[in-house]
Length: 190
Image (cartoon, rainbow, N blue to C red; front, side, top):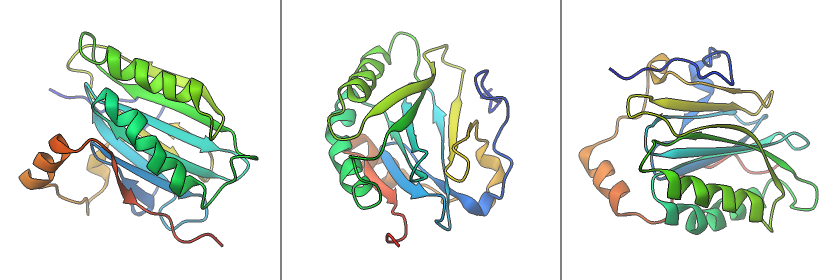
């Protein structure tokens, strides 16, 4: 049985308005900000996959990506940086980053790649401030990032009644992709 219990480094599941959530699935990423109609980014099902969420307190801009292959990290961050540049300057931003997910014995390469991206980011400075990675196969982790407060939570997808339903075709395309696709573009900058 899969669990959606809160992880130890954040104490609660996200309990805000489900309509505020933009869900990010495997091989996808989203960018949002506090003033957006969907200021919360959330993902779940982080077994062997790893999510990286970043938040800049000054601009209240955040991003969330759900990766399943080590190559995804390097290839996808160019697209993430491109979108971020529309909302926050690399000269003023400093992202607080959370890493969540992964399984012992199969996610070590992906985790190492994510840490290299964080440490070596020449575009946006990033500080790894939260990490809950690796573990047993039955630990189904999740991540919700609320850009209104900068808080991170666990996420139970069952609170969202109008969830986007994924098809078998969506899953097949996910397995063939090498670059995460953007699923939630924020509204244009003000």
